[in-house]
Image (cartoon, rainbow, N blue to C red):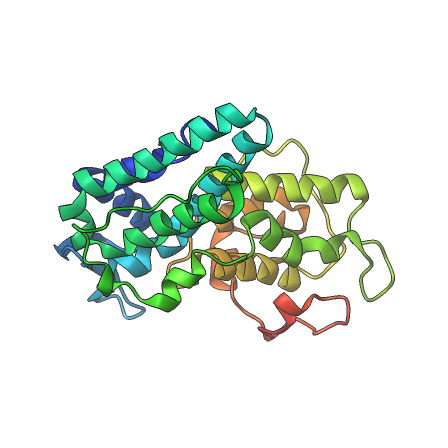
Length: 295
């Protein structure tokens, strides 16, 4: 369920439901090497992986840790949709619109309080959205909205985590640019890494990769003038910034293979085995700090 300008809370209205949550968790594990998973408690998931010795090992992860990055991205999408509507409509429409969104938030708390009390971390984006409405979008003549949280065990929320859902943390597109903008410049030999046209394609393809959570249609392959090690490692950094590196999403390997002519003689398994390898990446001056800090 995707959020839109008219329905900016659609994703949260969808996921705050026991059956839909399981579907989302299953999709998240689809990107990993796990063999199976089980929601053993409302807050913990146990899953099985095959280790390097070929035997099976059981591990666990908190649902909060599994979903945190996804919830933050959907929180940013909701904010963007709220802002887009408020930017392009009349005052009366905005006032009605924001009131409807507040009522939708309150309805979630009223109707899904049992679920939320089992998964209290869902209050992070919900509260963050309300604060964004009150501090950024509210019209001068409007009073601040205040949620009735009497059914919610709000004291269980970590204040530092809540602050992260109200901060100016980089959006996905800002993160993409902070990592890959060096490719519109020159390499260590003063050669332009990508033409302006090809750089825009790189940003377009990478943005679609994150949005679709799969390899987008590639109309033209690219050939940046940098080492394969740096190119591959740059996408490892992107994955780490957006999702951490606990479970690498395999479509990243496919994407690197498909989009770059640099890897025409490589197979996906070799890209996977060397994906996070930094030892052969030279710490050249043109590499941005967001990458070099991992070298």
